[in-house]
Length: 187
Image (cartoon, rainbow, N blue to C red; front, side):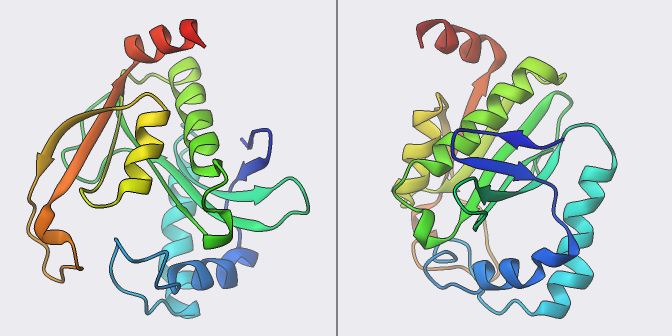
């Protein structure tokens, strides 16, 4: 199911999205806190898109969504709402996002992530949403705080191919259904 916000449609990925994903994943500024910038069209077509689509095919409301601008249909990036890769637990879902530089600083990450939280807590059987980012990634941390998530802990995971700033560690954020409900009443 598509999710509509004021400025975006979050929709399922399709085969026509290969070039957009390659461009997004090969932008050094976008990947600054994530690592490698050597995505090939073949890898996206044969590995990335099938993985993204496999989560959608389960039909449970979780997965990856392409973010498309409502004012002209531009591909803005993507959002995720899935079981965490680290320490998956029943009722716990991870939120994440990756947007083109042209979409930065416009509140789109906050808008999309908030829409996922709202849909998740109002329609899906979850009790907690989590996220993580690098400690030094202040832009992403601000988004998480704007959507009501709170800092839970800092970690120092081992990375085989660390990026600059890894030495400062990662931060984990979370919000529970009760915290989300309380924040909604205040809006």
